[in-house]
Image 1 (cartoon, rainbow, N blue to C red):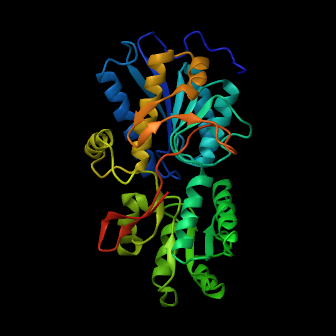
Image 2: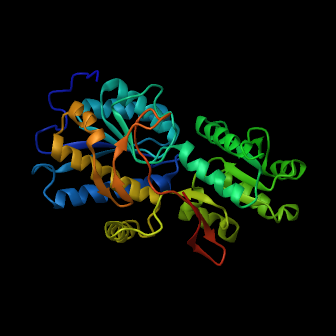
Image 3: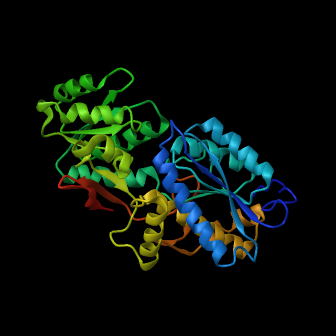
Length: 370
């Protein structure tokens, strides 16, 4: 591995703590609620690590930076955290932002354990410096396509905004459906307002609409428009990226936000560790934790184990990815090289397709697992 020189104080500033840089979207236009859940998981795990004696007697310290869903801001944060001497990076929710952070971390020789972002090509070239907990998009979205086909939907419209992430998702869906004689119709949200989206669904005889767009807007307006168009009473609305996971979705849409399937990365039944962490996260958040909070917790749990075993030297941390074997909240975490994936990958976290139950919007129904 090409190892850039580590600062003399890598992993510490005054010798009293081991520092991890934490990236999360905490202000708009980022998905703030996702960022808050991610941070809650990161912080809970760090608190537990310190209660258990820290890293060789030294406290673990999170140095948090808000990316606000801005790739350039994330790159600046990575530069700053590297100069501060953090041992590793953790977190980030938005795939395009994580991709920028991963590229910079790779260039600097700074280990990065990505919590939530799913783009297959998290870096342009294979890297030893980056590992990931979330399943790759090609894995999760293929499971979502299997769900659609199993439910009898093979003529799918996608209402998409311009983005590498949305374009990648559309490509995955098109390939999966085409193999079964299905089709994907692209609706460009740069050209169509919600009413025009409804007209296009009728014209193209789509049986399902997938919203590949930002939350809350334009996603919320599209859902409202489709739900209240009597011509579209039978159409399925889906949001594979997970917008309905968060309580803001339910608050903004009420009953209109139910029965919209999305991807969630949780097992059908939590382990005793997962159940304990769920209770602690619920207390910290004041609401039920999303899968993103569990991703945050597992991220720090893995990094703490690596730091205890290999110390705070950046090169040794990166070299340890293939030897990780840690019990997380959602299963045993180990990293491997996966074809088509440029980073060390946990293959695979549990994947569910779920929706909010129309009879009880705060309850989730598991529709499909993969």
